[in-house]
Amino acid sequence: GQRAALFGGRGGGLRGRSGNEDQNAATSREMMESQNNALIDDLEGKVGQLKDLTMKMGGEIRSSNTLLNALGVDFDKAGGLLKGTMGQLKVMMDSKSNRHMCYMMLFVFALFFIMYILRKIPYFGGRSKGLQPEIEFNATGLS
Image (cartoon, rainbow, N blue to C red; front, side, top):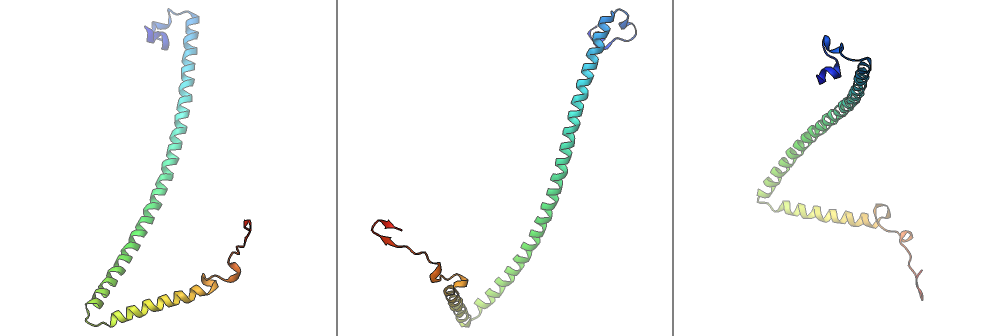
């Protein structure tokens, strides 16, 4: 009964209606159809936005994976170098000679000496007289 009144019945459902009821039902159907079309258009827009977003996310994920793979290779290389260096240090420490200790002390002394010399040169971080702030004291305080 109610379904036939809203959507029109099959066969004999339309015979008992007046012209006004048919017009109201048709208007109601057109309104519902236009609302459905508007909702479908809105849904299509949202689906398009989601598609664009997922495509951008996929690109970001691919570039991140490429970067992570490159970092993994670099870390593997660094680990190999460190392992080789540690092996050489172990061999050097296992040797009974004290010569390696003298070389190390000489290297540390030379390093500190070079840092001391470079500190005195203004271009490498030393201070020149012209760059130091001048602070004068007078009877009222700083000026």
